Length: 257
Ligand SMILES: Nc1ncnc2c1ncn2[C@@H]1O[C@H](COP(=O)(O)OP(=O)(O)O)[C@@H](O)[C@H]1O
Ligand SMILES: [Mg+2]
Image (tube, rainbow, N blue to C red):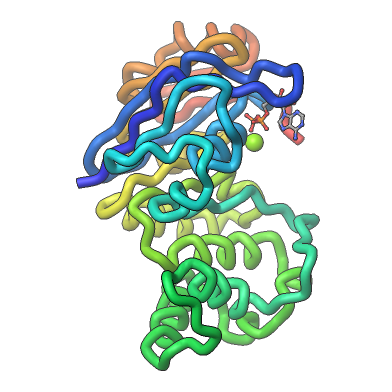
């Protein structure tokens, strides 16, 4: 069984307080959606959980290990998939296959440059599972579409089979058909990992969501979806005009760039 405990976490970027005293915990396997308006701190929270940001207070404990502000330690438990757009470029020219394979090499205890046959097979299996066409595997990442890059980053995050997978706006650069495929994949993974997904549109994953963390600019709410996504709380976070709730859908008219 896996666990994540975030305790009284406080993060500022420069002079900007993003959140303070943010606490939530989850044990077992499942899916947590982090929702909230643009600028509320969703990306910052994922980066803090992955250890990339040092909080000014509080801690992040994964599977009983304090990983606060320590990307190396956190990296043993966390796969982080950054938000990708068609404009996202990486600084070095690398093929999709090598992007995935590199992570394998860098993270292991005794780095060897060559992968074994078994390791290559494992990478191929992940790429196939993610529905990445073989014709794209040896293309430079910078030449791929937003959706293809997104899948590449997910493949990279999955290589070491981390207990906790963080996905920042994974649907933002994926077309509608791809969205359903990606949603199915996330749901499947959530039966054996803890998955934390940030999103602007909670609807597609809502029936499979175990917990919602709704981040507002000065407040947050955490609980089961039906507890958090009440009209009352949504209006507190988004304002009256921005939310319309119908039987099955929550429409959030929040401008986002
Ligand atoms: N690199 C940065 N430099 C300065 N401010 C930042 C940086 N990244 C995020 N912020 C600020 O932190 C707050 C939270 O941003 P972010 O976590 O990206 O929100 P979200 O992902 O919910 O849209 C915002 O006010 C944003 O302006
Ligand atoms: Mg963000």
